Length: 157
Image 1: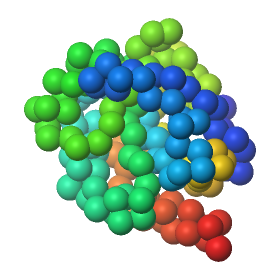
Image 2: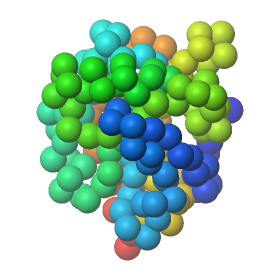
Image 3: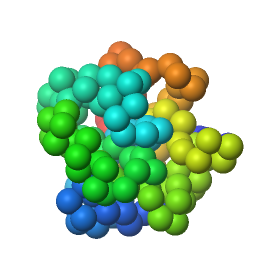
């Protein structure tokens, strides 16, 4: 079951596309985080979604929100994916143990071996403030991210 809003986001320690370890708790007290789970690098829908995020990166930077993509791909695959598409944001490899972070967030699809398309907006205290999940094959829209960021502004006041 997908984690509910207003619950503490599970911490993690995963390598990014450059092999550097990224920990969710390192952002606590510093900046909110948007976690974007996606099934597989180089697949058509995932590429389209992440290119939309790339093209709208100012939406997150203007609000000083860290944008992080997560898939079960290896860090080498994610690095090639980021370089091929010009992604200027962090991609994390939930490769081994396979899909453990996706499982912690309740978005791992056991029968398929990867995460569904799910997004979690986590505030500076580590609490999930907004989330949305798309049906398999359906891309998330930038409007959904805008609404989630608006929810973050509501909880900041």
